[in-house]
Image 1: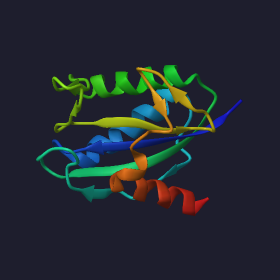
Image 2: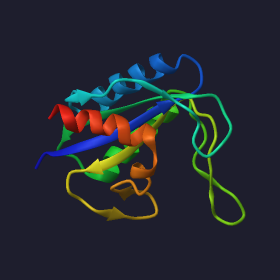
Image 3: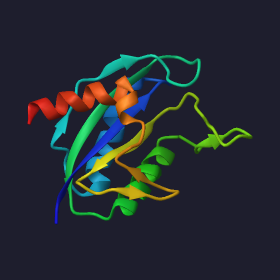
Length: 143
């Protein structure tokens, strides 16, 4: 059964817009479906650390895929594009944020609720982050 899946993409290194376009092209290929909707690109300050600004967008797909398979494909795209780091945590277990060439997050996966060490959907911080909330609102308003 196909489900609407929403992603947030961001880049704050190199040609940020070209990085997003390339990531979406790769997602279209790897996920087996062209994207249905894409938000405008917006520049936002770094969140959780002091770094260069990001370009962010949201993308909607209709997919008939396992969520963990989709996650693996997104992580593979990040690595193919040159991201060689994963989430890091400090001694107290708090996430350490830093600059990145590309970041692809699954925000919503249909109506599913998933809570695992590898994937949590809906994304727990989406509503706190303007760089996710605003592009997602733009997609929802176009429906």
